[in-house]
Image 1: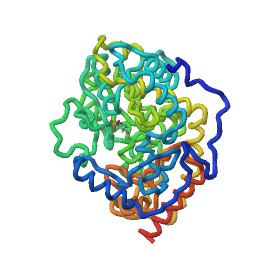
Image 2: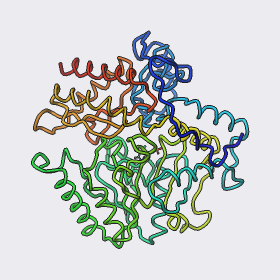
Image 3: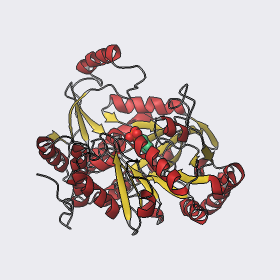
Image 4: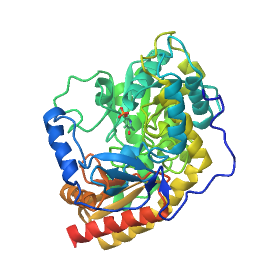
Length: 473
Ligand SMILES: *Cc1c(COP(=O)(O)O)cnc(C)c1O
C-alpha cells in the first residue's frame, strides 16, 4: 500500500506512552542482566569483528544486539539493556516502532527502489510535504532528500553557494557536521574525525561559539552579556577574516551535538540570524541531531523563534532508516539547475515509508510533549547529582537531549575526560547504554528514545548515580 500524501496526519488526541513493564515491539521495557555485559556470545562476535571489520570503525559497547523495541536493546546473550543513546539520537520514536515497521514492510514488498530521479514515487513527495509543514517558518518551502546527515550538509552548502554566488562558509568552534571531505572541514574537532585525513575542502572558516560555561570570565557575567560578547566575536570574525559579501552561508547547530550539547545563551541564535539576513548570508540550521521532537519542540530553532533559510535533518526523522533532507526557502532551493541535486539512493522509498511512520508516531504519541516530560524526569536528578559531585560543572541541554560536563572541580574547568570514560564504561557494565561527547571528551550525554517509559528512565538514572558513587565515591 503506497503512503498517501497526508498519511501522517492522524488523530488529534495523542496516545500516552504506556508505562510499567509493558512490551514495545515484543520487548519488555525493563533492564535485565543474565550475563556480564558484554556476555560470552557478544565477545565471540567481537573477535569475528576484529578479524573482519576495519579497526577504523570504533565501537562504544560491544554488546551485539539481537532485537530491540521502545527504549530497550536485547543483546545476543539475552541481556535487556536500557538505551540512553537511541543509536545517536536516531530511534526517537523507539526502536522498531510499530508504525515504522508496518510501513517499511508494506513498502519493501511493493518495491524497493526505482531512483526518484528515474521514475518517481509518492513517498518521497509526501516526506517533502511533511518537512514543509513541520520545519520552522510559514514561507513556501522545497526539500531534497539524501542518505546521511553529512550528505545533506554538503548539499545545503552547494545550494547556498549557487544561490548566493558566494563561496565562503562559516562554521563554529565545537561544531560537528559529518565525516565526508567538506563536512570534515566544517567539523571542528580533530581527533578522531579529521586526524590525518586532510587536505580539507577550502573556503571554510571558523568563528567562536557561544559556549556559556567556557566563555572568558563567564562566572562574573550574565547570560545576556555572554550572548552579546559571543555575537560580537562571531560578527567580528566574519567581518575581519572572511568578509560579509564573500560569505554564502553560516552553518549552526542550534544546540551542538557531538560538541557536547552546548546550548548557546538566549538571544545569540537570533542575533546570528539577524546578522545573516542583513548581509544576504544564508543561515543553515543543522538540526540533524536536534530535530524531530528531540529537544521538546519539533525543531530546536522553534524554541528561539528563529527561521533558518535552510535546515538539514536526518537522524530522528526516519525511525532508524537512513534518510536525510535539506529543506529551505523555495527561491533558494529552486535556484539550482535541474540535475544539480540528487543521488542514486537519496529518498529511497523504504526510508521514506519509515519517515512517514516515524512522523505519524511523533504526532500520535505527542513526542514533543514526551521530550519535555523526559527533561522533567532527568534534569532534577542530574542537578541533584551535581550538588553531590562538584566535578559536574554543568547540567545542560533541552528536552530529551541532556548532558553533564565533567571538570577537575569547582572553579577549575580542566576537562575530566578520564572520569567521564570510566563512568560511561560503568554504566555499560550495568546495562545502560550511554554516550560521551565534547571537544575534550568530558561530556556524558543522554538521548533516550522519546517513548521510553518513566520507570526505565528512573532505572537508568539510578545506574548513573551508582556509577558516580563508585567512580568518585
Ligand atoms: C550526526 C550529525 C551529522 C552527520 O550525520 P551522518 O548521518 O552521520 O552523516 C551532521 N550534523 C549533526 C549536527 C549531526 O549530529
